[in-house]
Amino acid sequence: MQMMNREDRKNVRAGILAAFSFVVALCSLPEAAVPAADARDFMWEARSKTATVYLLGSVHFLTRDAYPLSAPIEEAFAKSDVLAVEANINNPDQLFFTKFLERAFYPEGDSLKNHLSPDTYALLREELGKFGLPEELTERERPWFLALTLTSLQLLKGGFDPELGVDMHFLSKAGGKKIVEIESLEYQTELLSGFSDSEQESFLRYTLRDMQKAAKESRSLVTTWKSGDADGLAAVLREGMSKEAGMSSVWEKLLYERNKKMVRRIETFLKSHGTVFVVVGAGHLVGPRGVVEMLRARRYAVEQW
Image (spheres, rainbow, N blue to C red):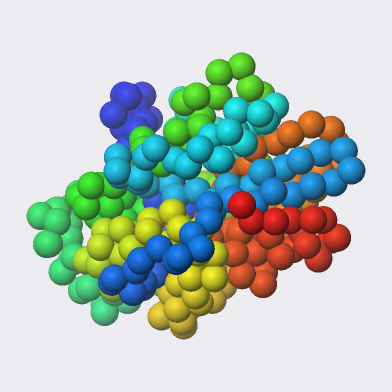
């Protein structure tokens, strides 16, 4: 397999980030979302007897006007000893990209059309036409990766950039702070590529049906995020999850199973010493099965800023 250049690597990284922006990016929000009067930050402080953990909800694709972030967020980061992120997206090696491509594309002699229903394939052709993309360009992409590719394209077209995401913002200014991964790019890739054929098709179909609204709704999402409206974002997730019946197992794996693993990792920080600044997708923090409520159920004090 040929070596990937810098632009190829950037595109693959954007695709991976799109998967985890996807959790909320394609869910409907009120078009005229406005900040609540008692707006707060989308950040929580979890405490134990020996440690403090700041939990910041991330949006992985953002626009320049989302910055600067609030002073309390930046101050919490400044006084933290460790930066913990889902995956260190600044540090993938060639071996990772080689394995990623093996999982993202069908082998020679197989194609996407062999794995989709006629209805989904017709919907795909329609959306590819809107992008001006020929079918042959995507014919060997597996459905999970094609869903990410199209989500990335739509968000980029709307002015959103993964290089401006919250994760990248803090990774770029980590300086001498220790950086730890809560998951890893390898774990996230294995998760996505491990979806069954039916789950992958549901994932792609879900993406295709709401593609044209993604950028507009993402702007409303950012407004909700900047005002710290956790209940509003939880409602967005509930609404999005009701759109595609075949997505229930995908949601379970993409969101809830990961939430459990994140809580176990965050608990190790709380059982140690010092201050850790955790950045994970905003959707993981909210709702009754979200990280915040799961930590509270384990008797940790967790308060929103």
